[in-house]
Length: 181
Image (tube, rainbow, N blue to C red; front, top):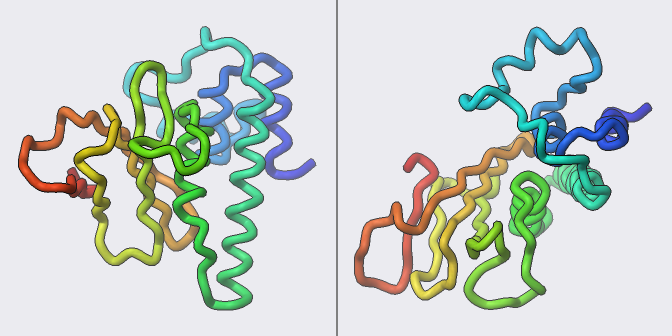
């Protein structure tokens, strides 16, 4: 059994996509009772996982497997060559799709990267190569939400979903959003 086979078992047992995403993100198999003492630190403030979301879709599991494979390839590439693949933007978008359920637009669509419910979402990634923790987006973009995905040197992912309304109204062509905001 590979490290990620428990995600398939979770799907077969009817866990929601969010539950499977949380398990994949923290690396804990909720079916393994030896890990329950550590799970509490990962439960959200609203009381935990939503059990009413329905069964996970096979496509969600496929996205997590694809992301895992791409991350492993990028990690190995750095180990072998000492260089980074130009893949971080795609990894950030794929993470947004798997974790948040963002439905991405076709490639090269202008204005936003996808939709989450009725909201258009722009996804920006902070790679381990970046020395600053800020992203820049075009003010003219057609998005209601900004997802900032941060990937560290160990290929661990963190994300923040921000409302466009939270940015100050200013003139200028770009909006600069800092990870610390």
